[in-house]
Amino acid sequence: NTTANTNLSTKQQRTTSKNKQPQNMAACSGFLGQPDFWQEEGDAPILKFNNDQWLQNHTAEAIAHAKKWIAAMGIPESKVDFDRKPLSSEGARIFRADANRTFRSEPNRVLMIKLLSFCSTKFGDYQQSLGYVAGVLLIFFDPATVFKVLTVLNDSPKYLPGYWRGEATACAVDGYVCLKQLKPPLKEKLLKLGLLPETFVQKWFAGVCIHHLPYRLLFPFLDGFFAHGNRFLFQFFLAFFDEFENDIMTANSNPEANALIRFESAPEPRLEAVVRSAWEEKYVQKVAAMNFHHERIIAFEENLSRRLQGANEGMWMKQDDEIEFSDEED
Image (cartoon, rainbow, N blue to C red):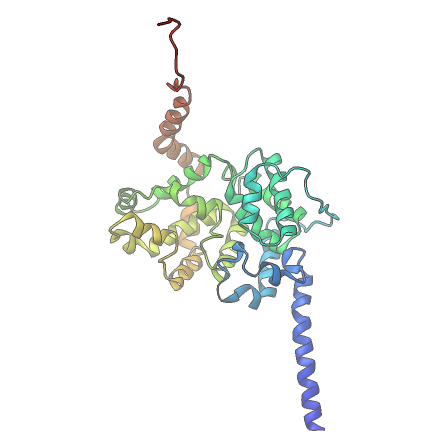
């Protein structure tokens, strides 16, 4: 009887374990809630930084993080019975390319293409970083909810206004605003190494580190971003360069420093320390004390204005690509 009871208890535990994950996933309206999600999407590019199967092992925790993100923005999940039909035309080729670079399942790709097309139509432009953010959000929410979130991120001054444009000047401006806050020797070293802010803040800010941080660090990072907006991105910027100041100052080449800034050579425990310290009061107060309107004007005028003027003026130059033939005959 004891053996029988033990076997029955073990069987019940296995049944409970099997049922537990679908219950967690049933609370998720995104792709993660699909019964075959891991079979279809287990090696999807969007999961590249799902190290050590963090998402599989922390499904309920990850869903709780995601629900906290939209709650911080005051966005309720959509109740719309959304239309899954593909668009009659997929629109710009970049939408298909970015969907293919994000998910494996064709039905999921089709939904992402539709979402990106809607975004481009409503926002008047498209930038690949938007696709990164859309990809992560689609894991947890239906496309209608994701569209609401992306709308607020794109339009609200609190988040990423102007960051998701083909020519993301606003993102570059904020990169230079942050650069100015660093110690002069560190700032000069970065510029000497050729690490201009626009070469890396696109991934940090516009792409909110989605293709750089391992998921176990990305999710608390996104907690900070959705709660505090782009100010948390600036706090992260300052915390990162405080943590890695000596590494940058002793770097001998652009590739060496660039690998650090792309987090490829940055030890994960130190990145964890950066994400954690970005919440610290010293960074909160420093960023809160900044006059962003004034600093953005200065950053644009000193670093980008002439460059953009020259590039756009050059579009009017005559091109010597037409061959002129003489009217005279030999």
